[in-house]
Length: 238
Picture (cartoon, rainbow, N blue to C red):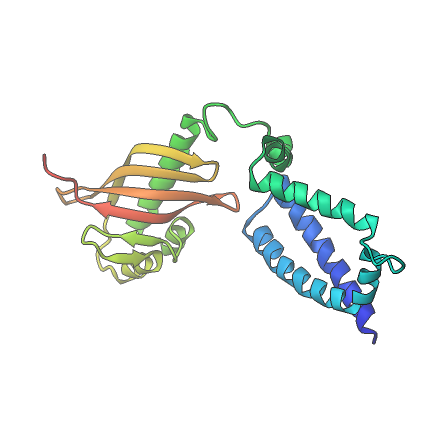
């Protein structure tokens, strides 16, 4: 088995996957799986490229250096200049490069509205749906439904200043002898970008007189909105 052939085939196969995931991301069709695939295959590509360079070092030197004069080949100048221009354009955030970077997403999704990434009506709708689903799942003790909205890794800062995770809330539901019924009311919802929404509201446990205020950070991932961080506190007495 020839190492050059093996490495070249590895580079080709990895590049094929990177091309697909890169285009998906460029056209705004990325997801958790696509992003992770692109990242890991990027690492594999760098590794394979190192072996490829080692195996073809003499040829690469021939491409860059004129054997007769010892000077640099003209062919080296073009890729070097192109790489430098793109690196500088991206690094200094030159408008034309910014437009180019977002052209794929804009082509598929259309231009963003001038008043923000999401309309306020859409933001309010998402917030109310998620908060209502959270309250329903918690009140019914439905851990599966709750996990779909409040993942196990979600970090929660309680009224007492204790840090919990979504998995702790799920375990507490399982241990409950008497189910607690909660009601939530969204007071304010604000979009940070296309995929992040901050929700502020009030939560009340039926049978108690002391409500608590909360802040939830919602994130859209794989076309599903989830609570990825939460903070609860008792309202201050005026």
